[in-house]
Amino acid sequence: MKNIKLILLLLTVLLITSCNDYLDVVPDNIPTIEKSFSTRDEAEKYLFTCYWYIPRHSSITENPAFVGADEYYITKMYLDQYAVYARYIAMGGQSVMSPYCDYWTGNNKAKNLFRGISDCNIFLENAGRIPNISEQERNRWIAEVTFLKAYYHFWLIRMYGPIPIKDKNVPVFGNEDEVRPYRNTLDECFHYVDSLMGDAINSNYLPEIIDNQAQELGRVTKGIALMARAEILLTAASPLFNGNTDYSRFTDKRGVEIFCPNKTEEEKKQKWIDAQNACRAAVEDAEKTGHQLYEFSSVKYSNLSAATRGKMSIRNAVCEKESQNPEIIWGNTNSLVMELQREAIPRGLEPTKDKSTLHCSNHAVPMKIAELFYTKNGVPITEDKTWNYENRFNIRTSVAADKYYIKQGYKSAEFNFDRETRYYADLAFDGAVWFGQGTVDENNPIYVQAKAGQSASTSIDNSWNETGFWPKKMVHFESVVGNSGGNATWVQYPFPVYRLANLYLMYAEAINEAEGPEGQNSADLFKYIDLVRARAGLKGVKESWD
Image 1 (cartoon, rainbow, N blue to C red):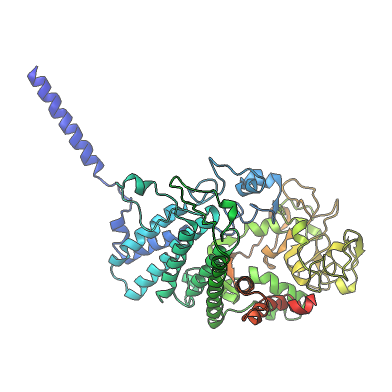
Image 2: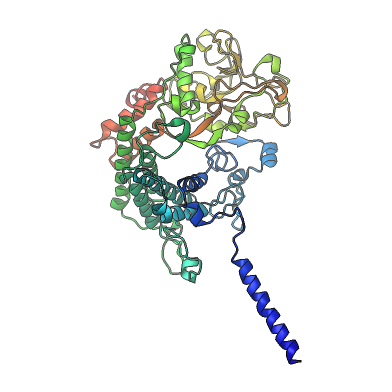
């Protein structure tokens, strides 16, 4: 009996030992942290892993900014077929238990940004031991990952308000306070992100421009970081986050008011002053490095009218690639625009293809957004005394003076006439001239035909527009849709996250809020608004409103 017990004991010890040996073995092809930083090439792979978490700005399923509000509309068929969860947010269907576009956990069409921050932390902790790399390159990589770490924190703050700051990764055997941290206050969150972004900028290792665009376009520059900092501080100054008393009773279990709602007017104003200073720094850097508002000046299309050239200057400011577009400050090369183009283009633009069954045209613009565009005089349609607001839905026939905007001789709504250039550049509607789709003859243009029974009307289940307005600004003019879904050619372009026009308007807003139109920097306020307006063919703010 004793021998049997001894044998069983020995078998147990051997079994436990063999299990321990098995658990100590790392399977082949599973990267370890040591291996990831053992060579320059392996470390560079980890650097690009940190970049991978940048949200796909052009994705209608991953970016709730498109259909999570009321600026963009999609058909029910498209919503169900592609599981565009962000649309349910706009419909009041957001869930507490399983949120849509959940960048906190990486569920429901989103990336896990806390995991992205963890990968950034791992990189920053191990960057010092990468071999065979110059200190210049090492420090550049560190600055890039510091930017990404700040940007991911900012994206989460913008979505969730106060979050737990993840400056260091939690130890494997961390205690409960480390594993389940409290959220930091909103002011602490913004201060941390601003400080982190400042570290990336002040390191002086981020390049001013990308010289090797074939291999490095999309990587972080100093100008991108400066504009990101301006956006961070402008967001912190906005009424949504800056002393918002709607969140007065939001406290954690310690009794801490995490939204910091109690601010004096001086404290709130200081936020705008900080944003103004950050915007000014970003503007100065952008102009110093050669960024300017895009103007369409193609030699290939040199005989275009001023009207068409004006439309293309606005449209191509979004669609033209960064290498040919000095307005782009940051184009997300990991988020190429294709689906947005396909679904923004009306079906049947050419008469020979009016029977096309191509899956397209499902993205629409609500009329309330179309109403926000100004008249040709540069003021809202409700303010222009010369514009026929009361009869805006009457039918009117286009004449020769309208031919570059609305097909001459075509009947369309009065609503579409005598609007600013941006209206015709950004939107398509019944009768709208469409420059592109393989046709660039201004005297014999293709145009949208959207009345009942016409080619762009709601006659095909997988290809129709619910509002009668298409977001044309997303479609590159050289993209061409073939017949019956075939022979489509898409000119894809990186989604423009940051443009100079955005920055100019951000700077003007910050000046207005910090000082008002009579402040010491009022000249800059009107200067930068009017630069954007001039590109759109509008007179200055003061002249237009006077």
